[in-house]
Length: 303
Length: 309
Image (cartoon, rainbow over all chains, first blue to last red):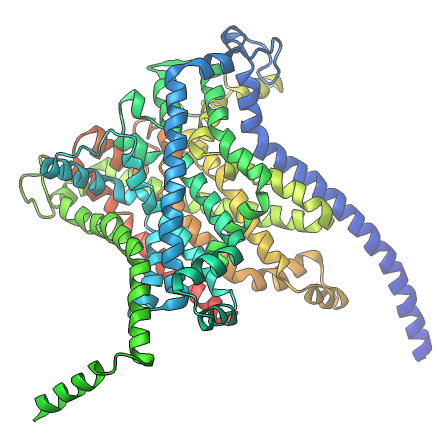
């Protein structure tokens, strides 16, 4: 009796095993199918940007298939890349982003080291506070900051509004809290023995930071830098509110405000500009994808 | 008497310059000094403006007179304000729900395929998150163009009518949510994929032996194991989506007839364009309660996660 059931069970198991393998294969095929659909959905806008950027104005206005280029041309690229204002936007964006990354990394690495390892009165509260400030969006701060900067001008005569470098003051509100937060996470994961050994050898705290912590936490620092750069490059609200003269604009605002003239949309140039504007983050992402993803997931999983 | 004792104690501690205590004090000083730039930035550029917004909201348009809650009572009487409240909530809740569902589904598909192919797919699927939202929204604006919409070209070619994407209030609302979902779901996908990878394989094997279907495995194994990350990600996204500016600003600029304005875009229109900073500040302050609730919940979740680890 027992052998009989065992046999039936065994036979059933064998059959089920075969059906499971088949089911797995089918599940795999469906996974690829749906993934392809999602990739099409996710990549359609950038691909359409690229398609449009290769078209002449005449072809954009014609009633041909919009998803195909009949007379590809690089005219839009050459026009934009030789246009003085566009190059100014690019330069402003690049300078602002590089400076914001530098300032943010110095401030947040120092602070994270202090909060993760050295501790002082109130440092635990400060660490929580840093996390909470990260959650304060720029849309809540831009109006009071606008007024504060105007008042600052009244008192000191230093005009902050409508200068590209005001963005270097503003962007750290977005980058510093998050970078500090993820650096605290990375620094906390470094074994205590390492800095204790350095301390016994007579290293100062600054030496411990530069000779031990920064080299060991380098992947985290790269992830934070990428985050910082992406945020600075993509920021739209602050430059839209704080800068207006054409030579002070950064790329996203420059493209939106100067390439759209009234109701006249030169779509070929707008799409080319948008694609060129998206290129730096995309190139960094293509080469440093793993760091990018590490930084993305660190915010919620570390600390 | 008590004074004498106290001063005695103080003297005795002060008289010990060397030793552990002085060392600690020095360490604390250095630590504070290291954190000082951060403290200054947070105080002057986040905390102070946040409180200044409260003050600003009580002034009149020229910022000369104190009007108390005048700006708020003025807002409460305007239909547009209530429309903005409704649209902000609808926008944020719907978008976060779709992002979470799509992210969850796509994460499972990616997790399903063989390990060595996953990197490639993940790389392609994250691209919408990498492109600056202002730039990708321009592409959507062009795709939704009233006369040259590439979507409508496809629709008319398969025999359907073209859709007035941004001209009709309902379609415009759909449009801004669609773009937001497009930008945000890759982030959910990455977070959920990381969470999925941390679910022990033995649990799936045990469930398979017990005869669980694929749906039961997801519902009874993956979902409880991922609960914490699901909550944190959704709350994060709720804050960001609720405070969203770029997409609505570029795609519809609040139109048609203010139907798609959210708090951020409307406060920009009133404050910067309309030159009424106090009224703009009052509008943006309405974001605060939801942000505070979400932030508290996130903090609780992150702490809980820290304790588990």
